[in-house]
Length: 77
Image 1 (spheres, one colour):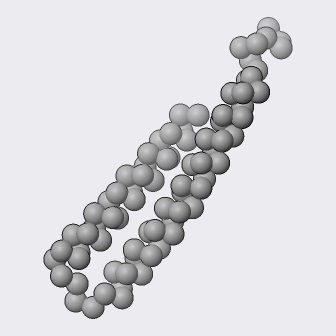
Image 2 (cartoon, rainbow, N blue to C red; image 1 turned 90 degrees about the horizontal axis):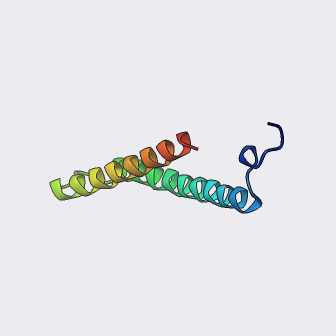
Image 3 (cartoon, rainbow, N blue to C red; image 1 turned 30 degrees about the horizontal axis):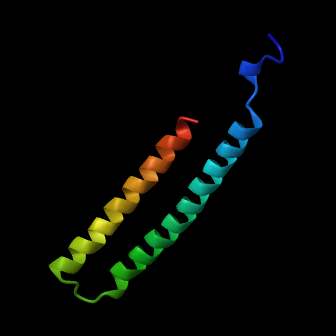
């Protein structure tokens, strides 16, 4: 049925989706900065200790998890 309420998003729902999309975009941009800085640190730290490697890997794995969550939530929209 054309024009039925179930086929259209309410203005409130559309605004919420736009806000969520903007938030995901902003998080993704900051995540990219973190990953770039992390990769640069890996090359600039001479002879890193085991602790340093552990923390760099922890940051990298956490960033990858956040990226995965963003991608999965985008796929469900």
